[in-house]
Image (cartoon, rainbow, N blue to C red):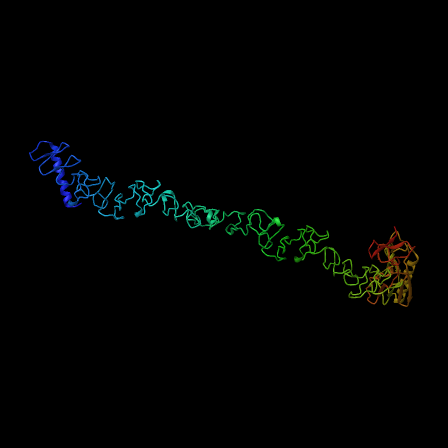
Length: 566
């Protein structure tokens, strides 16, 4: 506003005040009475359309352009389009014009200086004018957020407007409504794991406000850490996850195993009995994981040396207690009850086909024994067709023995003979006194050797004739005389069994103190005369007698026993 306009307005206001105080109080001859009823003093004129006096032409309703008037609306009011100086009221004139709805007028038409270029806004948020030049997006007449216009008027508080409206719950606003670009379509998530918002656009399956695994939501928020979700959550022990909880499909129902032997997980659904983390046998878990390699589990674990497994650890049932033998003779393993097992069924070696150590009398000709056999009649007696040491076939022969009388004998000293059945005790007698259980050999005290030999021969001879000779005993069922023949040559008595056969091979026992008195036991008896229950391999090993003894063998057996045929 210029100085003249200011002074003019001031004077006019004074005059109006004066006139109003008393309309006709000061009427003078030079005064002018206006149509409106007011009186203007000398030098002033009536305003054309206002009850006011004017000092010049401004307000007379006529535009005096030569006087610099731009307008004249017949009054000297402001804010009616033509101000009191008759200048057109326009934005930028420095005068606040209510008529033009000016909110401000800073004397220019420039924005962003506290008064807009059209003077309709003081460019402040909350004035209900949207000042685009100050980047206002709205103005609802207040500076309160959360009502559709933010407190700084920069945002209409809509997601996608590029402004962060925290009052509306926005955590971001990137100027669009698209997800997957670090700001969700609803502007409520930065689309990062750990913000508590499940962002499906970034393939999040959960978000528990942290980036830790093992708490039901994985560190990347891609998994709920449950088996069957298709994500392998190793932190909770998963080694696989095929999107289901089925078994036998390469991933166990708990996702803890890929169902392969050697992964360290026992997959019972796959029939695994164990899993020690490898596919090596003989370490307590077989290479297919189907056996714990323990004897008694009904599985034959050959890698650990098993040849059988019958589900128990007992011997004698076809599978040994340690499962390392089928308990068959010839398998190379010495099983309970076996003396040997050389892995074959050859009876000519040191272990016969019954797994007994080869020995004379086992019925097998053992050509590889320490003393090679040439025959074996099932016993180690000379009664059969083979010698007692199995070294030669034998023909029948009678046992022979000898008594050599040298020097003297004493009263009461004994000589004992046996034929294999009858046993006689002979006592040297010098005083006529002998027990009733002994056969006396009467000699004179101090008798010479020949006399002693002669008396002993006589006593033996009598025993061979009399079955009831005192001093001789025999089984009650087989009473007989002593079956020996005795001859003498000077001091030597020769004894010979009356029958061929090994039964005659008996010891001669003596108690003579004189060491020159010597005996040679009966030996050399041989013949096919094995008695009842003696081992045999064929009938003619047994005593012929009346032909009733035979070699009785069980089916499939090599050795039998002599006895009467049933």
